[in-house]
Length: 600
Image (cartoon, rainbow, N blue to C red; front, side):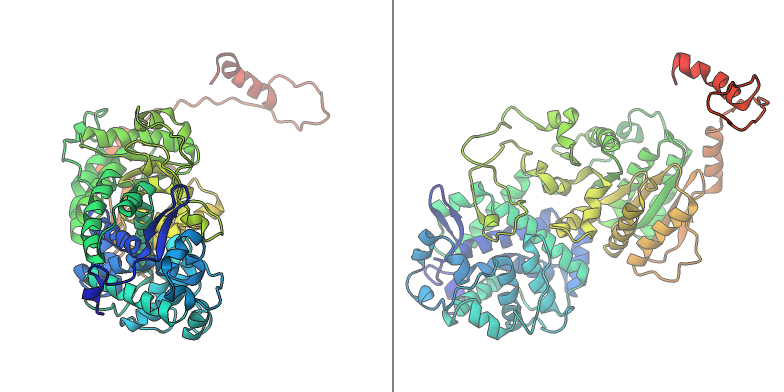
């Protein structure tokens, strides 16, 4: 049969299972689950990905965006093709007996291969048959196969001539009947998602974003309440299920709060009601930066000013300008400590609510965010209570048992924002405040790093207190800035005390990721007080105008009263010796008396 016939009633074998509920013995077709995830990926492409992210993926695949969308949906749908192997299908005897006689008879030796790795191994040759070039580590087939293997959180090494060779796949992952059914599934997905041709290239940036998108789509479609109704009322064929899956995906993405939205344009005093007018630095940003960004495109900005002078407001205005011109939507505000993040969340939440959006979740991400009563009290609703019919859906369990990730239980906490509060899911919200370490995990070899990179690159990233990191964290920040530069993601750095050398190092890291070289002798110090914008296209530094800097400096000028006390210095000598009047230690004790008496 051809793919058109396979899409119809009884066209292709739908008995291999992809989801199984032990409590009710419900079995869900693997083919339908693959279609579900591909359909969710398509809706996420339309409603969640920002224009900048779509450009990065289409450029990385070297094809128009509409064709790139089809390829992304196809790869996302193909993510679990490794479940169509004897080992995985035999994990549940109740579901295995449904396979009939042909597949079990052709199983051969059942070898323990986790299904994510199996997806990568069998996917390599199936992709090659569809026109993906198979070659070295940077070939489209190898990178696409690693996207399949990485959908559970970690990119896996692919040995093209070893474990992934055609001979090993045939010997360990099922005989000809299994291979032919996998081939028919893949070609059916290719047909349903309208792929015209295989991409001739796949950049690292595109592969990371595609993998992150697949992770999100898989999490959505793997929710028990998402697939169980489909198992109870299955479609007659793949074509019918594809039509249903698209409608279901649109409703679910909207319900989870993942659809992007635009804030209404409001006056400055409405967005920042505590201020009567912008100060000189903020006015300079609002007056000068829009033209620069419109002409030059995305880049990195640095704001240096004293504490309490409105750097946060300047950063929010910069983010608004970047989002208008650079194809990003939202803000990712990073701070080094949880207490500072809690305070910044209140600032960002007030800023978003001042625009009066219909629905705009602002999430707080750090290890103790659930202790912030302002945050949990805002998000919890009377319906957001715990149910007692089993553990919650938990796609985040970091265990090494391949099958454990596929177990399904009863629903967990209810409420409109429950899914978006879940661990790294919270990073996916359009407006997010987080500790810096949560973002740095996007560039560390940890699980679900690709999802974090996906969450970061859709927004303007604001790094507050950029100087206040230890040596290790500073190194990870440099790596993160390189990635953000490669993704063409705008960044704003804030600091009251950042040395010029540190500012220059951070800006250079971003620009090197954007492909700019030869910057070792160029200074990117913003001046104090002031701001700097370095565009990614030319690495040109654009600084705050001197009249505005002078006005900002004059507004901050304070009178300092200095009193000089003459002292006599003597070595400490023996412990317990008497301190003479006028000696340095006696004067220090005298000066400290007001603090001791009245505090301070």
